[in-house]
Image (tube, rainbow, N blue to C red):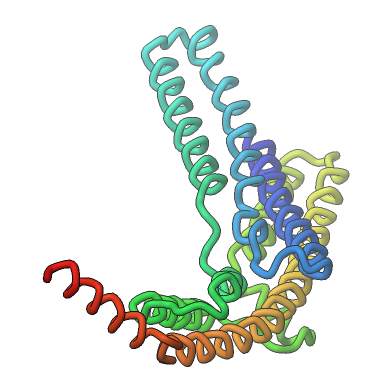
Length: 267
């Protein structure tokens, strides 16, 4: 039972690594096509392993509940296990729903598009101040966790240990290897399972490095693209400031004419 649970835990961790690597490459392709300037899927790569964890947990929970109900004849314990499974399922569904429906974060591109829409028109100073505040907020958000600029071996290894989605799968593979080694020592003749556990450790290590390298390439590409958009935003904001402070041609004459008409009507 314990080796099976350890293997199931490693499978969940493996799904996390595959999601981490796959979403990084998918976002990188969209960025290269010019259809995206912010990372959307990569930060929520945990959705896939969470779903896998729920599936594995449901399988183990149903097996445990069946043994409690039919073998041990403990209906109250079986009901308690069923309630725990239901709560876990609802919590996972809520987490995935919130992640899927969360609006996209503000970005330089969104701010640039708004400024392009109002280019050449007089923009109220309050709105310009709000845009500058948004620009500062985006700058602060991007400066919190900047990735290393290079994808060298040392930077990749450092990036591996800075992200739990790459460390935890390797630890799960180490746990699987320890559990299987103990099982083989107690029950000789199961050396094949030990080879599977060693292979799992190798696969998790390789995927951790590959995922870290793909993440570095993606985030650095996004940062370079955002630098270009930020320069455009700064330029458009300066132009909008100039336009908002320019006097409107003929405004004084129109106001004087309106006042004269008003006085004539009152007279």
